[in-house]
Length: 197
Image 1 (cartoon, rainbow, N blue to C red):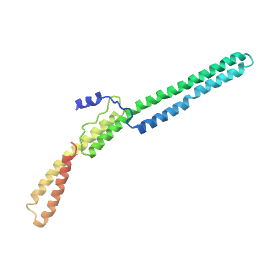
Image 2: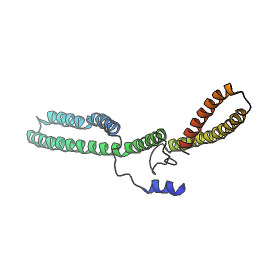
Image 3: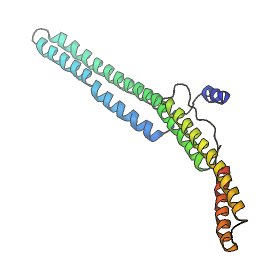
Image 4: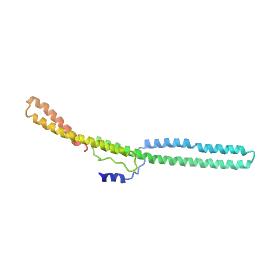
């Protein structure tokens, strides 16, 4: 089991958009909020330079002209910086959100395997993924279910043997009922045998 965990941990995730709907939506929301909140700085600088220019226009018109040119260059630089910063935030959101989407994706895959009676072993997440306690809870729950299966299977075997013994001593008209019960018990036991162990 530890070797299996090491294999899962050693494998690096190469696909970062595991759940594109969630990850892209989250990234766009964060970028939009970041863009709106950080646009205050260029506007504040623009207003500050405009106020300085208005105050200097009567003292030194040539300085105001040079300041106006610098203001345009500064605004262009801040606009490019803003776009670059937003792109960096977008990429960071994709990287962080895949550490959330990965465990959810893998847990869903394991749950689907239970539905189709396939045993995928213990659930482990990669190093750095969020919610490692989810894998522990899943493994504990599956272990608990499997223990109950084993106990129930033993009990069903005992009941089946008891009913088979009863069928020798009951009247013939009651044997039909016991045969039906035995048939149902065998069906249940077959389902237990097909369940992941």
